[in-house]
Image: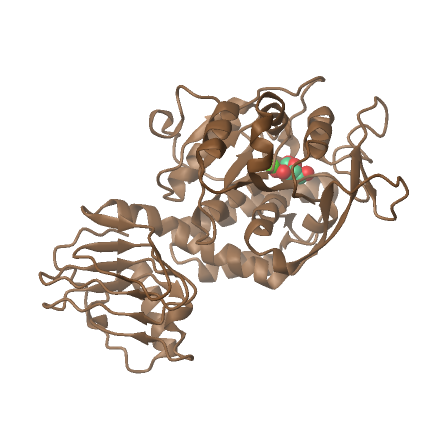
Length: 445
Ligand code: BDR
Ligand code: CA
């Protein structure tokens, strides 16, 4: 998938979710003006990527202004930087993470055309980049699998009484996108995202469940700031609506959404209605449907994904990157066995997969196991120096015959590993508990 965003507090969460979900492969990130200037939103995307330890993803700078009218920024909600409220974000490393020679539109075009599979997009800022992409390179249209948009409203707006911010920012772009002929467009409107509130209870869960304290503080700093501006501007007392990750979640957990396939048009006129999304639920226009309008999302599965992903996000990149001969992010398919003498990082287990680092020399690191359904995880080094660390997967739930074999006596004592051990011990009474011995493998938390 590709993420087009104007980072932004909720965009930051969307980026973390997109980069670390085992169900998605994030091919690239494009920035657009919106919550702040495109210079700021580009830098913010990079700062979040660095803070979350996301590897192998570049940021491509996009549009600085809408197609036709003047831009608006949302500094009342997101602060003057677009991502105010924490001192934990690093300075942006532009030379590493910003694509120097290619803009957002060309990068999306290149990526979509080069992909052997159709590519999904999540657009969580003004739709200017996407409209330009579809206008300049219409050949991408049949190659787009799903376009999930955070934007619009069935009811009242948040920027004018009629219009939501992303659509209001560039209604002409939204019109182009909605009438482009992309076969699957989903609109996640305010009416839905306003049910996804980062309440006090949610923030407490993040503090309790996100294993790296600094990362938990970064997330909660951002959510608390976002909540405080929502309270000041909108009188919303319960917490900030986490708009943008809901559109990303739609791409991989559509089963927890309700939706209707309807006609949606954009008001591009001057006046009070500009930027309004006309949702023709009762088919009054008799025009063909062009969009899946999301009408609700189940909260518990959504938040469970957010927490898992936030926890993994902060550890996966660096831990894999530090090893030589690392195999990162493999998908282990049904019946397949992957052997490695060094590191397997972030394997995604598919049905019946078996992951077995089989080093003779020891020093295996088998880290950040994510995903659903390994039947077995073996860590059988001859000198018993393996580590199975930081794994969050149903593999270990012990309730359907899965096994975790090998050298769990070498689970280390870093914060991440302790978290894993506690979880594992909750589930298996007999897991031994001893100190860290990485056997020389490169590994860092
Ligand atoms: C949308 O506007 C922005 O401020 C948020 O990031 C979100 O994409 C909500 O109206
Ligand atoms: Ca946004």
